[in-house]
Length: 165
Image (tube, rainbow, N blue to C red; front, side, top):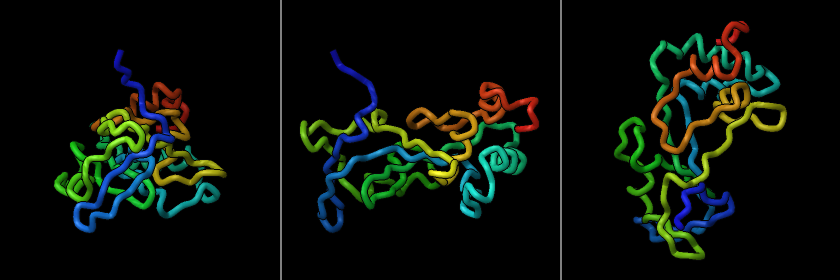
């Protein structure tokens, strides 16, 4: 029976830079960014908490339409746009620069959808870019999810009617 669970975060993937032929063997993860969530670049968790950042993001960026989610592949020193995603431009992505990763033990080609999605948090221990969304709501996207309805997530998390969102 085939399993479609996410790969273990410890899984290591081997791929090469197409130009230099340098080979990498590293764990890979999907990294997500919601339109506008880099507003955290100007703050630390000591400056503003997750609820304050959510209110700021919601008032600046939520226009009632689903918020776009951008996808990246991260691992080791590699950070590139995810292939087959809806990123701006969409033409410059991981496979433009690197070969298709294979599992370093089994040789199985990567199934991009099974890569683990990175947790992004915003607390005294972790000040991840955009981490206020997951920290406050408990929500993070499914692999390659194209957008999310911030109002629905706020309602599901019990934030609507509390002054947040």
